[in-house]
Image (cartoon, rainbow, N blue to C red):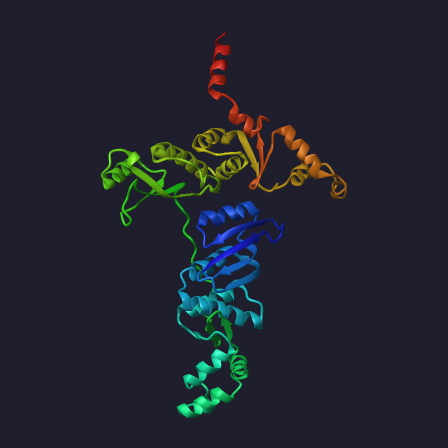
Length: 393
């Protein structure tokens, strides 16, 4: 099972799609884009991996890390556990609206094999037959085959099944019938947090033409040359061309699909070292915004952006042209006068004049007024050589 959801800032209503469970960096990035703390509103679906059932939900002002904890608990549910969770969710939601705490507690009870049960039955008719066959109706328990056949031939099994279902507060999930007694209170807010990734890039490396079950090597960048040598030694190769990257992860989402080959591994490591420095200096968000504002990003462009980080300022609280335009008058005009102005149109015009880029992380402002895309196309080496020549003259 997995959570396929849209999360939003309860204050600004900014919205973002995300799949859970997710790594810490993904959640942190989502909160940064939404410009909010851990409190979010979420609506979406709990998808059953067996394609039998879907739970739609809306949780108002919940904790995204608790929602992620729920996702991590249910993602590995087996077939019967999945049935119990979906059925239990429906049963509980009919009594009163569900929230994250109740959903986590339900999942924990199922993990403990506690009070949530399912058995095979397609509908009320099947349910009645199942109860008769297994002596589960106390009033007629222990009947012989002749009496059983008579009841099956003459009784309204559909109505009997409906009565059983109503009495037990049960529900049908595809080919399963689920019932639930009162759950134990197993969740007291002690959720498990995802680990904070201590890397910029993570690669799963294997041989270029590896057999199906051959070994893989996980390497995290930035790293030392010693680890590169150890990786080569483990694979018994002398050239990285004999290796292939099978999985790639980045804490900068926009670099997740960046093209590179194993021959670029050292360049990729240098890029990781630069981005790691930005993380240590609290400039990672500025770099993310610069990548977000760039039309296409490859390994070379990603390196170019590193050289420009100090030339830009990121205003995270301003998320639209209207915010940017409004901020220009914030300490000049009274609030009622601001309401009369078209701050969005003004913000768009002044942003264009100042070379400002609007990103999902906030307003990106060049300190010298040169727009980011124009700055990337400037021949920096030639410029610096020209300046030296002018100075010498």
